[in-house]
Structures are given as structure tokens and as C-alpha cells.
Image (tube, rainbow, N blue to C red; front, side, top):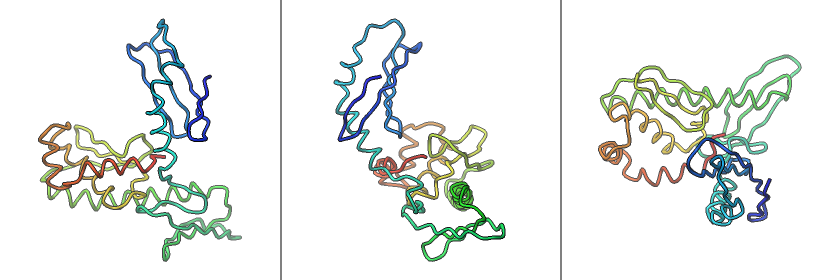
Amino acid sequence: MPVLEINGKRITCDIRRKDIRHIYLKLKSNLQLELSLPHNTDISVDGILEKKRSWIERKVKEISEAKKTFNGDSILYKGEYIRVKAYVLKRPRKGVRLYKRVILIYEDSESNREAILADFITKQTLEYIQQKAAEFAKELGVTYGSIFTKEMKKWGYCTREGDLFFNWRLICLPQRLADYIVLHELLHLKHFNHSKQFKNDMTGHFIDYREVVAQLKNYLLH
């Protein structure tokens, strides 16, 4: 397994042979590089890695600087890290409370602290989306079905049936970025593509939407 040294970080490369026609390179959030190659093709892996080194360096920098949901004793909430304080009680009383920019956790054990916080974030995300979706749907003149939050590799998507799915971490984003994602999916109920008309309508609500999309790269989806 080839290993690269990028900005003081060791990047391992996982090479996979697949039934594909082209070469694909992907850098995961754990800084593991995945290189997919066509079967029965004589290709120099070292040559590919050297050719793509500048791209790899850029992606390593993006991932290394991106904000994560959990960061030590803090959690990302509405674009800012806020402190988490845990209180271990003798009697079981699991719960979370937000008080003056501090998240207070009441529990009988710290073993499931991250699970309690994830549940809190999920509920906050769903409440926020339900409110914003109702507002934006009225503006756009669209009707949506059910709203769901879950673990996924994107911030959101919609179905042709009108159901909306969002990453459970959406509330971690700054409000403007979160609003963009909700509006983006609702707008797909008018244009189920990224056509020129879709982009024109998006500009009417987010004139700087391209900058918003660029800012989303600063936040990890997990």
C-alpha cells in the first residue's frame, strides 16, 4: 500500500481494481486515499499519485481545516463550537439542555455521551428544517411530503414523490448555509435538476449561492 507524506501527514493509498473504464481518486475524511483502477490495465500508480499530488495536497488541506461535529469537549452548533458539560447523576436522568452557550448533559453514565448529543442534534435539526421548509415552500409555491433526517454522505436530497431527506447534522451549520440547503431541496420540487432555470431561481433567493456552496466545504458531513 503506497504511502504519501503530505504537509506532515501520512496518507495511505488503498488501490482497488473495479469493472470501470476510468481512473477514480477519492480522499476520505480519515485521510485515506482510495484509488480505483480498471481491471487488466497496466498503469503506474506512482505516476498517477505524482500527477495528482497538487490535487491531493489541496484536499488534505480542506479536510484538515474542516470543522467536525464533535471536537473534544465542544460540539458544533449553528456554525460555532459550544462547550459541553456532563453531569453524572446517581439516578438515571438522561437528557440535554442548552443554557447560555453551554450544552448541559445529565446522565447516569458517560459511556453514551456522544449518542445523547447526536440525539439532541438530530432533534434540533428536524425542528429547524420543519420550520424553514414551511416558510420556503410558501415562498416557492410548492408542496412537499414528509421530512426525514438521517446519516448520509450529502447534506440533503429530495424524491420525485416530494419527500425531503437531510443530514442529521444540518443544525451544526451556520444559519445561512442551513437555509440554503433546505431551499435547494425544495426548489428541486419545481426543477428536478440543476438546469439554468434552477440556478436562476436560486439566484433570486441566494444571489451569492456559489459562495455558500464553497463555504460548505469547510464542514465535514460526519
